[in-house]
Length: 207
Ligand SMILES: C[S@@+](CC[C@H](N)C(=O)[O-])C[C@H]1O[C@@H](n2cnc3c(N)ncnc32)[C@H](O)[C@@H]1O
Image (cartoon, rainbow, N blue to C red):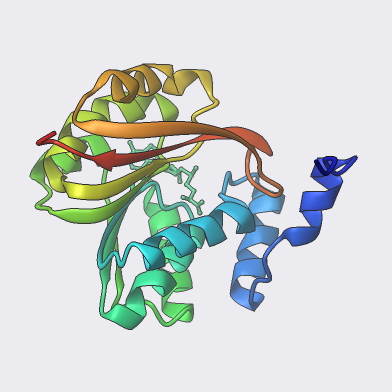
């Protein structure tokens, strides 16, 4: 049996995925302005999962400057996928639109200036893939609408599930037989926060 590496955080910090100039610019802005973005490890994770699942209909709740939307848009664009991302702060939404244009993703990603909780009941699905990253107390109220618009077999990923305000969501999805879910406590360099939970759930309404 092999031993674990001695300093896992230092060790795994050596595997932060490469980013292009746009993503690095957004990271620098986020650090300067204290904007809580997912960072390159979770960004790459979203890319891997969206691409591997063949998601072509993606919904994001919580855009900020569009950093995570760039990863998801790039994952689905080659297959002709489409993504909608909701952001309730008009200045952030405008910045995200500019950044997505710079990424060449204006045709793929539609940024809507809207409150997620007010908009979700009006959204038409089905979505293959949802990334949940809004105000943490809003996660649980979003869940029933998400159960309506995520297709059977669709994937829901919730960020920041180590924050206390996501507890109601964590309990609700854990107890809901229409979702199979798992919580992963992770070390996430450059993620806000660097030790945090992520919830991965697949919609299984008929089982
Ligand atoms: C954590 S940041 C999103 C970061 C982004 N996903 C990224 O990693 O690049 C959360 C964003 O969601 C927005 N937000 C919070 N609650 C919201 C809600 N109920 N509806 C829409 N946007 C919301 C905030 O204004 C903020 O810009």
